[in-house]
Image 1 (cartoon, rainbow, N blue to C red):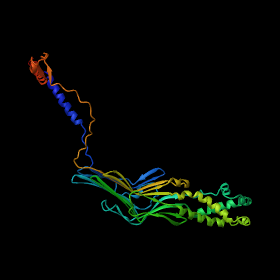
Image 2 (cartoon, rainbow, N blue to C red):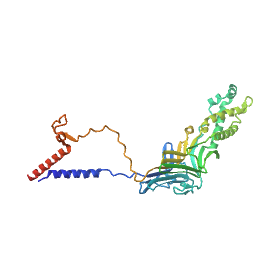
Image 3 (cartoon, one colour):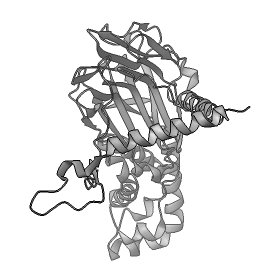
Image 4 (cartoon, one colour):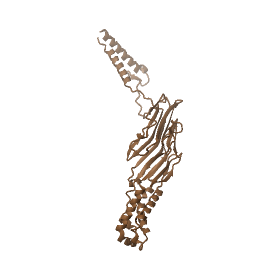
Length: 414
């Protein structure tokens, strides 16, 4: 004979076990985190990087992922650096139940020595590395007839009219010859080491950057024109402004020399009317106007960029280089380079549970009665049955339970 109450109890027990087995396991919360990326490049809106090396501590052990010594070739499809050494490292640990994190990342020249995080950085210098920041194509410069005449007074325009067809080709030829000799303008960085490091611990974090033997320069016609020397230990978020006015003057001097030779014959008929220097000045003025964007900083460099995410979390980038929009007029492939990005934190304490969110206050529930009237009205004067006239809720439940047991036993005997 089937015992329904017993089967019901079994189903309840089974459901409780199923509910327990379906409950999700509580994942360990990391007490320290750190990661590092040596090089990130974005060329023509296409990013590539050296990957990341990361470390996480869960309170009992440290786990890492990625490579701490990536090859420069991992940043594919770029000519930013041909030879060099990349390094990126991160470590986490627990001391007295408190998490700590540290990281370093950077780029150095060929032959540099890679050291572990915590030794003042990731790299010690070797040979200097040359970084190709941009190339400025000057082949689009032209001397335009309409603009050329617009800059001259009427007397000079009248004097030039008979020989203009001969003069302009000579000027254009001289300009082309000068620019061919100059070649494209190369904008470069030269450095022994560019690296950052950071640390994070209980309620605190810090970061710094180290830049050794570094400078920005431009090559014009095979000669180097220095723009700026970079500080060794820059203050946080230091902007380096590079003025290319000196480069513009180098270009104009070369063009002037070539034009004076190229237009020697063309200016002959004008010597009785006007000094040929005015013609050269007007031609150089046109070229100078087209070179004006060079004076507006082709590159922008930010050193020791620091972002304080929280008291115990910081991100540091040793050098952040951007090619500005002004360079678009010279068909420059826009480039953004982030060298030496270190990220430390957040950190926590072992065994500290994640605080539960405080529930929003709600209206209090209606009070549950502790007794039920027995159906006999209590006398207003306080007489009558009084407390005996009420059966407690507990008593009713006890009676109901007893009746149920008696009924169950009768069913078993039957």
